[in-house]
Length: 445
Image 1 (spheres, rainbow, N blue to C red):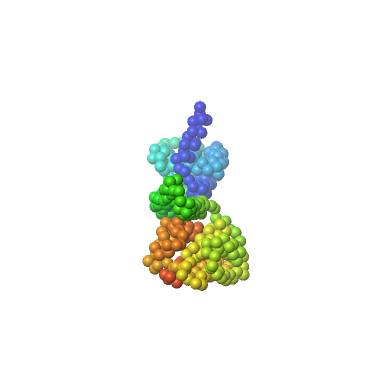
Image 2 (spheres, rainbow, N blue to C red; image 1 turned 90 degrees about the vertical axis):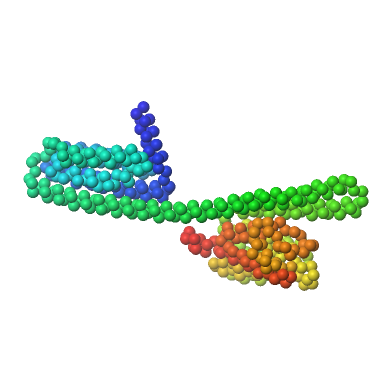
């Protein structure tokens, strides 16, 4: 039962204080330093006995050396609290035996003072009973040696030797106290810095969670209406078609039904894009802007076939960013440029330009379509927002495209701006940093 009880205490002590990897590393380093200092203290306190060849003093030193190996082993394995408890207790007990063998004349009992100073940083401070016990036993040992009547094992020491060695011990104790205080302050300063960093990170993540929760509430509320509208319309049209005999009317209702289902399909695709953008890991892909722009234009040309597209791409270097999110941004902007052309415009055109350098790529998509009203421009990147100036014959959007565009850009460290004049033009400007530059800015390289 004893080994089981020990192991139970062993693990419960460790579980009292869950440490992060960085905290654990600093605590292990701190405990390792203190352990070796404790061995040095025990040897220094034993010097008079060694000088007078009272070799019995080697037993406490040898016992502590064995305990030190156990302490260092537990420390390396991460059982810092357990190692600290063993170090505190064995140092106190063995120092007591050393002082008992030599008597109080050498001033060895003074070494209990730095031990009492450092004990709260070796044991679990959250357990008050444990802390009191570990402070109490070196205090009692020190009082016993100082005020007890014990016969030392050493020969009678001269008063000059006793005074000299007591002064030496006192000076070294002062040094040890200062050393321990320095170690403790340094350790606490690092912990405070890590705590502040953790608080900042926690605050940032909390703000992000608040934002996500708000968006999720809004998303669930809005998507329920957005999904229900085309479904309800299709069901209603289906009921009408069942009773309709006129083939022309049936064809008209079928056309409307198909349009509603296409809108539903477009909405579902946007939802999938939104989900993938949130879940997919960031990657570093080499981007050929000329090829990507050509592919996006070919994919969207069916929306409006009488549009003249002009491209200007200057890329003299390899550029790395997340290809999936870049294509999401590019396809949304190009498809909007086709979709919202002005039917009254005789010369419909889209100009796509891209300037690429080592640090960033600047992409601009400009059309001479219906434009976006000034009061709508600051809202167009919000979820489910639709500008109020869409022409009746234009296909209504889902209100997610530009929102997903901005979210995708934020994932890769980019930004987007819009400039538009109602009835004349709309221009979206996108800046995308290269992966290497972004890592440099964030201090990841």
